[in-house]
Image (cartoon, rainbow, N blue to C red):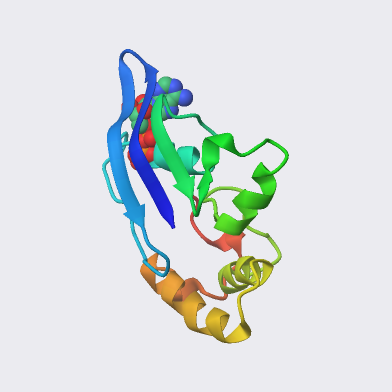
Length: 141
Ligand SMILES: Nc1ncnc2c1ncn2[C@@H]1O[C@H](COP(=O)(O)OP(=O)(O)OP(=O)(O)O)[C@@H](O)[C@H]1O
Ligand SMILES: [Mg+2]
């Protein structure tokens, strides 16, 4: 479960990214975060990964207060989140399909779950027709 409890992120007095944001994402729930450029989407993900600290409020991943996790434990917790970045984090020698499957294998998903979920994920981001293309053949961003 992911739980944001009245989270604010103020980068500077003129740059308030998030103001008192609260929400939960339940296990098995599938959520898309949509918003115009500058709405605070990346900031929200950085707070979840504890790459940024909230100015106020709390961020929980399962029962962990992300900003109380020690630096030594952070990589382990982040791996359990299975974040796929849009930029340079794809494996260049694997296709789009294989990149997603690989991330799922690394998080101990069963072969059945992988075969079921990978096409859904590709469909969702409009890459179904490029499932067997390599990252260099996909447009960046
Ligand atoms: N490191 C930073 N220092 C100062 N202001 C920042 C910083 N990072 C983000 N901001 C500001 O916080 C607000 C939210 O930015 P954020 O990058 O989270 O938006 P976004 O929804 O991811 O946008 P995009 O769709 O363009 O990726 C913007 O006003 C942005 O200028
Ligand atoms: Mg962004």
